[in-house]
Length: 131
Image 1 (cartoon, helix red, strand yellow):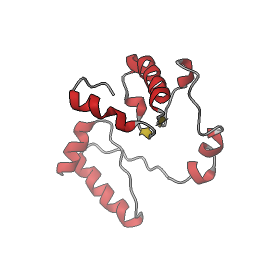
Image 2 (image 1 turned 120 degrees about the horizontal axis):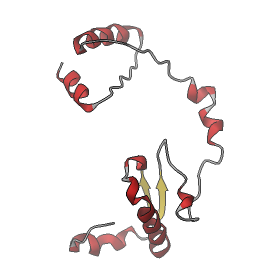
Image 3 (image 1 turned 90 degrees about the vertical axis):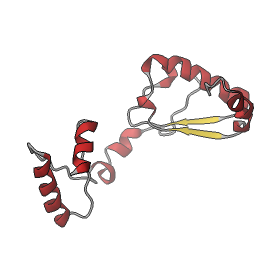
Image 4 (image 1 turned 180 degrees about the horizontal axis):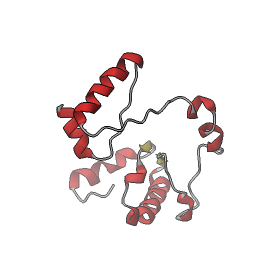
């Protein structure tokens, strides 16, 4: 969308009459939100493109333009449903070394078939991956 390369500009028309899904939009630079929302609003009209913007923490884009529609009208109905909110049982593990974490995960994997480990930063993820 924002390229000045000839091959990108000449092929952009192929997106006409399409649906573009943009996920994890919350990671987008906040200083560019207004420009981005105006741009996709105009592209939507000119090229007949439907944009679906997804994020767990999506702000209300109607502050930039009134052309945005929420696909889910009552999100609390889903987030507060026991099917959604009770599907995971968190287990907090306080370990000082990544080797200790490895041992704990091996123990837990014997009890639970699916496990999700959340790290605070990328450095520890890569260190744990090496272990």
